Length: 354
Image 1 (cartoon, rainbow, N blue to C red):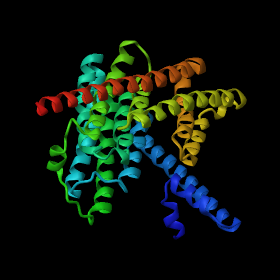
Image 2 (image 1 turned 180 degrees about the horizontal axis):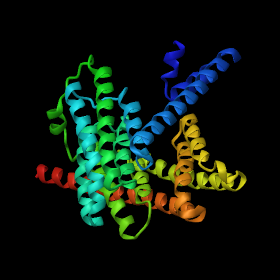
Image 3 (image 1 turned 135 degrees about the horizontal axis):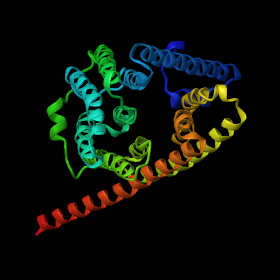
Image 4 (image 1 turned 60 degrees about the vertical axis):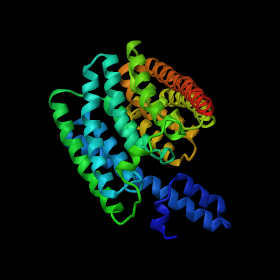
């Protein structure tokens, strides 16, 4: 494996090489490559988002984050169907992420929930057909970030331009990287594979209904940063209940640990470098292969931004409350949904047997 090829590995792949290292020299080499990868990735991400902020305004820096996520994920990940159709779907996803979060913010929480359900239905049913590729962590996360950092007026006009550029870049990179791959399935197959009795479809429906419901409830309760609850719910919803329970535990513990670490850094560091705590969190996420540690370091960036608006006490309280509410609601919702679907299946089987 070349130096460049090793740079392309994810955290789990790099750490697997470290575990398999037989000599100190070999292990030192893999550590060096891993650290270089983190440094290069962080530098590229910082530069990319900075350029978007300069071009489209600081209030649209989140557009740079969403576009960057899509580029980094879809240069390798696919949608499991014909490349041409997948490319058109990606363009459609960008339209949905650009328009629907903005419109939902103009509506009442209940009407906004209905629009969010419709939007997520398209993103998840056609973009997240394989739950273990975690495309929802890109598409639904991007949707929620744009929802949570909505803008109006001239800023929204700039957002339209930024997202159009992001769509063009993502579609170009995706098509170039996947055009030579052969797929047996197409868009029609995704429609035909929708089956309410399958664990995949039940998982998709939970994402589609539960995440907007969490946002709606948080907004009806006048909780700021409702997107935090939505993101927490999205990350916890998995096809199998055992995996969900694991994620809920790790998300709650990880966020509490992250809040404690952030608070300690907040009091130890001078106020002039508070904004860099978020960067430190990004580095920590890059070094983390396990979900629990990622939850810890993800907290840093969120709190670094929220503290400016709500103060330390308010930001910390919101972070803990929103995340606990999001994952617990998702666990209860999915448990009930899966139970109802299993009862319905039993009823159908009993009727058919008679």
